[in-house]
Image (tube, rainbow, N blue to C red; front, side, top):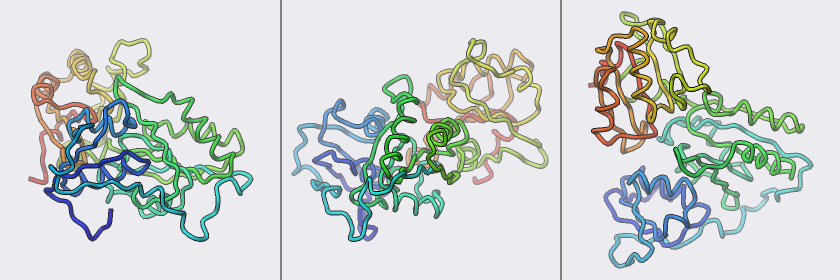
Length: 334
């Protein structure tokens, strides 16, 4: 999308799905457009299907183009590569860059991150990366969607590692593009190890972790000199008591720190009950921040014992970050 154009408030139909459609859709949503994709769900890449399932994009395989303000039909990836661009495969061994994209707002990506997008031969991305930033990519870039939908379709981590290695060994400059930070519950460590074990050079461009950025955008400082002197970040993709959980929830409850829960939408009820059982007061403030950094961002606050029910009643779901502790009652931006 050209930066000179604005689609705010317009209805836009994407008549075809192509490698750059994900970036285009995210850019349109960032601009305030109402987006429809002329496709069936099963024909979409994971990241676009996720937007549709979250109600951010409409799908209509039989859409009437005359009913829309704007119809986009072209495939920018079909244009020739810029003059002087190195052909893939001409290097003996390529490289892998792990880029943390922060939250959904593409303006939060670092300058180094934008430059990495511009020079990449291959971009392997997740669904929560700020994908409108892919508009900075070369027209001939190969885009690989390996997004994981909660309790739905996903690409196994082992296969993602293989993709990075295969493309880099073919001489390509590979960008692994994720939301948040690759090294904070992003499996960046596993991916780096898989590449270095094959002699592939790896670079890291840190991103803003959702564990601090989502609360910040909601007006919640995870530390506050008069309230709390630290914060604890945990993953709750498995509930307390599950054999796969290695967390000491009793120690977390007694830590007197702000507790930030990632990947805990499905297990939040169990997490809250366990923390209360381990000594946290049921009235402890909690906040549920959904879609942080996106136009659809919403925040609800409630006592710890009620936060799961309140979030569900509000229709909130993943992606979300939960903040537990005295700071969760604050909104310093109000």
